[in-house]
Length: 197
Image 1 (cartoon, rainbow, N blue to C red):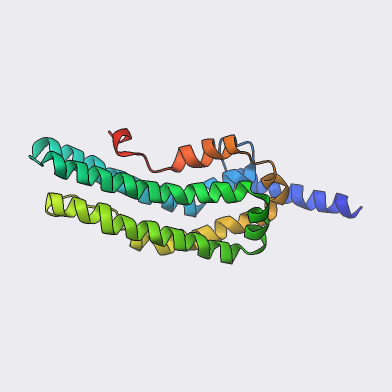
Image 2: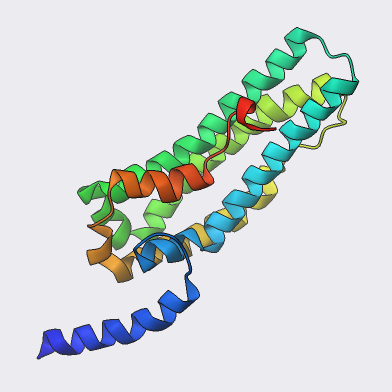
């Protein structure tokens, strides 16, 4: 009887949540996370970074930057993109690891602090490497994403997104490598220099 009541409550909650969380994943909890403000803000930051690469490439066709300078900017961007992608890989790996899943479900605030630290490192690396290099090479003509201004919002929304996984403990156990690669990594990763037109 207790199980039946829990099932009815769960089913009644999942209907409205599912309606609010469109997506291609077969799991509404994952769809909700992928439609969370955390992912939207992360994607916004990624788009800004990639736009600056695009702007630099357009400018480099008109200006005469040295090959070495273009290579420096490219290397700095790719290294920075890898740092942000590492954060996505960490989230993916943690959602697939049974022990880490338990930890993030029971201690979402602590887990959010870990991700905040990783995002801070990636953001500082981006500012110290890519942003500084592209500013030096272009004389400040190319705008770079101000990750530090977006970071507090990204972290705030991450805590909310992670709290969602408490509601879908059984669903989370069904996540697999292929699913996470398709819906999290491929969809939201920072593209490499060569992939940005």
